[in-house]
Length: 107
Image (spheres, rainbow, N blue to C red):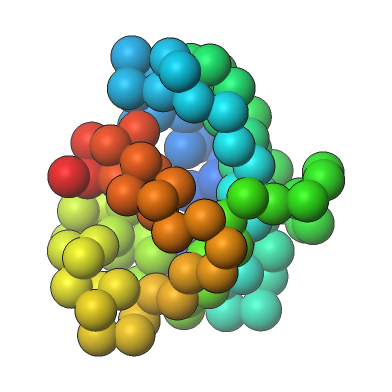
């Protein structure tokens, strides 16, 4: 199930999504990964994702090297360590970054 790159990750991210952890959540997230934009919309246990600009004003913006973000989602890099070392930068609602880890079983 390992993801090979950011495009592959966002095409198959639903494979990791834990709907039971997002039943009460609603958020639009934007990702800038090595200069390419992706987005994810969580709405009460459902997930949509795509490439390009987010379809609205994002609640959280994450920036990282695509390779690092793929490693995080493949569980090859600890997300908290990546954030603390500056490999992942977050803007806006930082609490959603914590929820994101739960939605994908990373915490």
